[in-house]
Image (cartoon, rainbow, N blue to C red; front, side, top):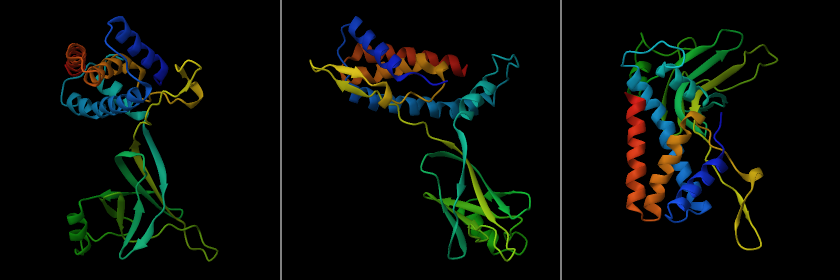
Length: 247
């Protein structure tokens, strides 16, 4: 479940006003909110890696590995890849919103899909020179270079032909980046900011992380308004929350 961007912004402003700390403009908030959401999102993977090495509680609501995987699952998606020939390779552009690559799946006509094994560039070049490990339609391989997928054997995307030639289809499974949150607004007759729900974008991370989200935004706000006390208090609260989640 998403976190309402207006709820977060008004909470931050309420805390700042109560403590007479200063003001955070919508533009400043949007920039900080984007950064904080990415930090919390990336922490899902770091915390999962740590929890997988620790003994787990199998209780339904206390299994941290399961909870972290559920958070990440919200961002798991797939996209059809258009592959064109580039020299000996088939080449596809990775999705623009890709955060972490999962796998590439190749389907040759009516055959069952096969996973294209992802290797390093060096290992791909070595494999194609070996009779034992040379890639084939049944055992394709690939490597990532920049925003490109390079695939062997080089087979372009194709639809089924009238002459009976099979369709060639590629599917990328990946974890997408969260969309940047936006607190949109209009300006009223006295120059005040008025929330525009229609143009706003909510946070996509789990609503379980709302408290951490607000705390981290307050920490960055302390930097913006040059308030070391606010920055230190928020940083301390954020560190305590991180320690609790990882312990």
